[in-house]
Image (cartoon, rainbow over all chains, first blue to last red; front, side, top):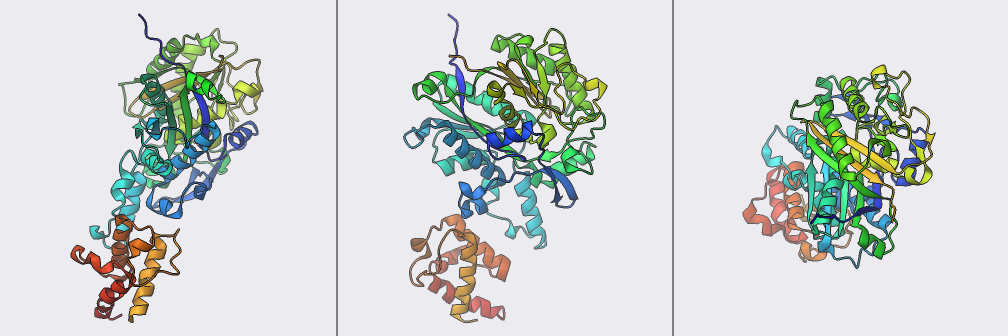
Length: 414
Length: 85
């Protein structure tokens, strides 16, 4: 007897990106080539480039919540509330102990710890001035916990730590929990508050992996010959996921169906990606989905615009999609919004979901001189491409310590 | 510093830690917790802000002295005076 897992569908999307605070605005800007990178002042470092979100935090939070909570918590609350509203579910009538909150994060606690150290530096580093909020702000589950507090959700609420593969991981974990029957609805995806920590900036700079450019909007340029590193961004994208039967029973709008996924590990280096393991991750996800490479119409790359990382991913993609995939198109969303870290996978998937309806592949922008080593067949550069069909989107997200995640979403067909 | 001036300083702190609350009509002789949303962490904020802003220490054993605005004033005024304020 074989196990036939429940079909899981996406029924709501809530997001904030550096270039949009709703899916419609985000998508419009992706199709119009509007990037969202600006200059900010980073403690100890001065002017740096960043993707900053400009949602209204007071839309769903009181001033006191903002004072006590974290930026990651606030972004999570905004995205969760937007997703729930978008899903059209009768939230008031929904059993709150049957909702799970699974939020992917690259890191959490750096911002809050740095802030406290800075604060006590004004008092001679006397720790009696250290905030009593430090621990609730820095526990790993903080972003998910703040959502549970704000929405009164009493089911499981925790974060998934998976470096920059975390956004995909939120959706993958939610799919698993729904299939296990642990919850009846999942609020899932990923968030990032990383632009508020100098440590992330300083770390990438020491690694020679921090992007610079006179024009902030041109700074994030995966696949360009002159790319010179990552633009760090904040952001969030949370989805409502449900079992198909439940979604259909309530007449929910369905964005797409989780077709397959894979998570694996390079086991080879702290930071350098491993194209062999990445290709293996993609192939295994295809296997789970029961799809061939040629069945994928959009491959959204993880590429962060580091000189080596982009080449490594292109090598992996070439190995899987290099031949016999005439209808497979490849793009990159970081060229608009930078690297949203824990939110990256979830946001980048959101930016491509509307392709099921409009049959347009958003391009990778800022490619003035394509790096020959990144010249993949099907790469969509600088202008949107209208295509004949979009039935399956494959979304890559990879992270440090060699964690890889591939998520495939397909057009919903009853 | 008079008790009224002391109350004013306490109210400035409360305004910052409870920014959603209307504190214009707080009664002096009624427990703060009974007049507004104030949890134990907020209470610790009052203690912390007294320390940060005014260099005043409130030992845990004395926390009850901060229950009302009137008791705050009675307890804190001598501490401000000791600091020459």
